[in-house]
Length: 306
Image 1 (tube, one colour):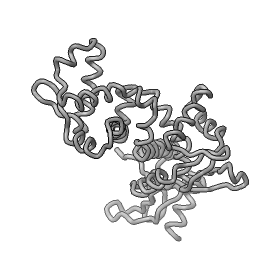
Image 2: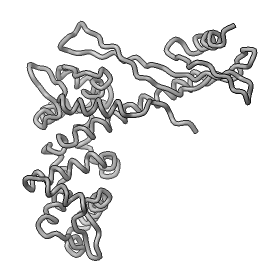
Image 3: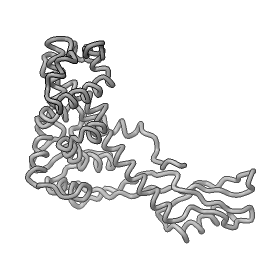
């Protein structure tokens, strides 16, 4: 009797045909056969420019569980179907988080150029302006601001200090090594400020989102995700109509003002985060190539085990 055949039959009876098993291995210590569970999760993706074409891709997900059989091929232990589903949902969430990180990292320059980003992160631009002009931001100068603004300025200074953009001295802050390096590369102060914002978004987006509650910027990232995540799954640039992107947003993030979402799409096109032509939105090829390269470099999806 084939070990693999027997375990595969058990798997089909208990998990269905979306789950697969690795080649069973024999554990000499326990005198049992063990097979790991994994899946190639199907993703059906469309391209509005070719409505009759259906792009079928798979997300490979490992370590969903295991099946253990005795030497005489009797089932001894198996991850339950509910546990597999739970791990699958964990992996899908991990993939969404990975995709968001890839997209934010690749398009941080474009996101930094958005007018709304410049406004939302104005405290950082204010700090940068002061350090370019006076080289040192003294504690006494910060304390002259309103109590609420003092707290916010200190929060942003800590954020910038963690990136080596500013450096703490006895009575205030001065520019850090990365600040100086970016300033030397920039052609003007406005370009330099945008480079600083790009660095902060690229390296600390999750902190901006979770600690600073930058909800305005988050919506721009979500719209970007609605296009680029499926494109990363398809591994090709897609051409989508506005309604397709807005439907994706509704499905993953819930309702939002259609007028605001349409405005955000236009802003992303203006910043070259997306392209638009003949009623279709599509990816910036340079950015997309960077995203694909980052995707290929990431480890396989597998849920953490306790």
